[in-house]
Figure 1 (cartoon, helix red, strand yellow):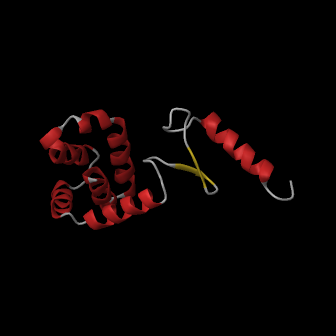
Figure 2 (tube, one colour):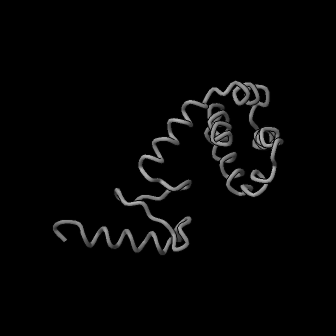
Length: 122
């Protein structure tokens, strides 16, 4: 939840920096999981690495500015049975990989082909 809040704080400053920050989080999930109480400090370090204004980022994260938004989005995801991020949809169907994780391009392609074949008028 805090990583999602942090991402919103970086996006507030810049979309390019926000995407870079998001990519950094996804690449380093294991490091985040094992960081324990230094979790917020690690997020702050990474925000600096992507060029976010450190004072503005720290203030945003420490204030919990996006906490209620993230909680609301999390509740919506649970309600819709979205298992996590990233989530891939083709139409209204969620596409998961064979292991339940992120699907390969081939797996996504198969679902797209199925959707096209089932389209009325085909």
